[in-house]
Image (cartoon, rainbow, N blue to C red; front, side, top):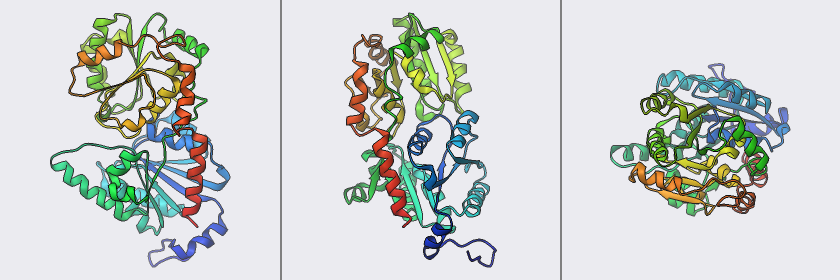
Length: 395
């Protein structure tokens, strides 16, 4: 492979066939904000756990410090994991670190999961001569004011610097790429699909987990999400305080980690809820924890197509969510939508309306898996679609 005057390797369109002959594995760099048990990470892991590893050499670049347990799981699955500094802390240094990784490993596909700021890594891929630069939209926000115009510029830059457009759902696709590109069929919708068998309800596991977590005879309200502004944990705690006034056996089970965790722990302490809130951290066995829940609560400020909601509905857990969550994910009947302008009192009433949902509860949890599969969220079929997409893109 030729080098330019700076000594860096050039990877051009003409050199790709030769590159593939030398190394038949397709080298893909996934770039995301972090590596925890979050939705984006779960989507990536779910897909590649079913794709032929002999066809790919995989890299994962994280802007946050990876959760060590999750990192080991990705490395065991064949990923090379790298941590780079955050763009907001050291933008130039962060970009140079990403550039170094892309160049040193002759990356052929850059798959950016940063939604609005996909243009940063797509541009870095362009500098390296990488001809397949994928932007992936994982959410849809409703922004007003000055931010609206700034975000409009970010969206334009993403469309210009990226070669392929992917989204988790139609709403997320329209948000980042615009209605016209979606209508023209230029955006591939890649569902946040799951291993439905893994998240299927199991009465035996439910009993075991509830005993393990000391939830026997308790009303368990569950939530999964990183402790960030988006997930709105502060409001969630306000709701739980009202739930406790109605059900003195209620307990809140929180899974995830993040920069706002200490702030939320302080709030729980101020409200004297410490004995009733479980901070379970970032877990790789999250499917086991779903079994113990009676209701799932998600008052997010904004969401794309949240993979946790697919998992929860596969398990048959009743759900109460904010109206900022795309309705594309609304699959089950046991699904209540409320406005964030509604009081915590109204949210608490909606949560408490559900009775504990074991197999004999208000929903048939044993039938939930079929519902999710019919809606197109089974990972087996979706993984084949992504596999074909990658291989066609580098031809």
